[in-house]
Amino acid sequence: MAEQPLVLGFETSCDETGIGLVRGQTLLSDALATSMAEHERFGGVIPEIASRAHLEAMVPTVRRALADAGVTATDVDAVAVTAGPGLTGALLVGVAAAKAYALALDVPLYGVNHLAAHVAVDELEHGRLAEPSIAMLVSGGHSSLLLVPDLAQDVQELGRTIDDAAGEAFDKVARVLGLPFPGGPPIDRAAAEGDAAAIRFPRGLTGPRDAVYDFSFSGLKTAVARWVEARERAGEPVPVADVSASFQEAVVDVLTAKAVRACRDHGVDHLVIGGGVAANSRLRALAQERCDAAGIVLRVPSRRLCTDNGAMVAALGSRLVEAGVAPSAPDLGADSSLPIEVVSR
Image 1: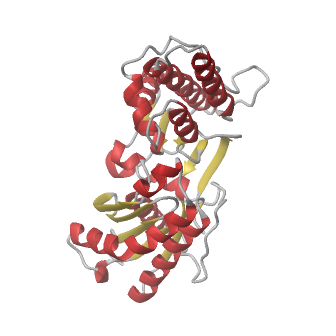
Image 2: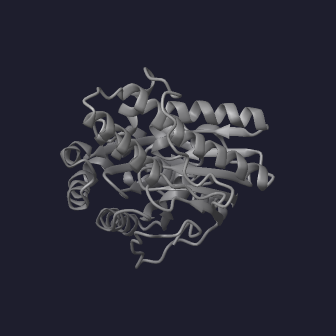
């Protein structure tokens, strides 16, 4: 195998079919096919629709990724695939496809953790991650704080959401406000015209007796819904921009405060933020402000790499190959609740 192997990555944990090609820490291509438009009318991702869309998009997306990178399938040295967590049916499509390509090409296969891959993708833009680092992952399905002593083999969970994840709360609040799905981008845009101090929404799990690193956004989502319902019952207009800004501020205030606290408590001076919600402009700004004040180096991937993509899976696969981690067995399966401590299967 070459000194810097070419790794083909498959990501199908939710509604996006992502195929990436990475050599070392260099991103060669990142092809994406999404079924988001098919889910929009339901206000959320429908697993069966996502699985069928992956089946239809898989081969064309692989071909596009190879063409964009200027390589052929026979140039691939290893295959990596998201084995979990995620939607079971969607994961199975990706795992089956990755196993088929690895078998046909006679190259090793690595089943990787979706959450760890969100951390690894930052290396494609900012170089090798400092170890240890604190990682905060925020998406539609996950809000987690991690201690990362060794990205290839040792990732430890410090805290997680106990109910709605941050991205899920964005989606539900957007629906209450009559904004499109997914809710993150439209709330971010509306908030830019609003007053973040207009409404003091609650900050979940921030009391002295609450779990230090866990997250809870269900109560915040309910508080926003009740505030909007009260305005509507009174026949008063709902100030969408102010509600969006105030809700968004409540979310990012909690996220950034807990992330900085985790860094201080563990003596770590590097924080990386990943996941779809990491594209939020206010989260990026407040995180930078608080990290600067605390002397913490902040790393956030570009917005295109924050959401689910094949590049992140290939990036983690590349780290595993470099670290000499054993490949997955031929009977690799999907695990919808794969714990973050399991970087590869």
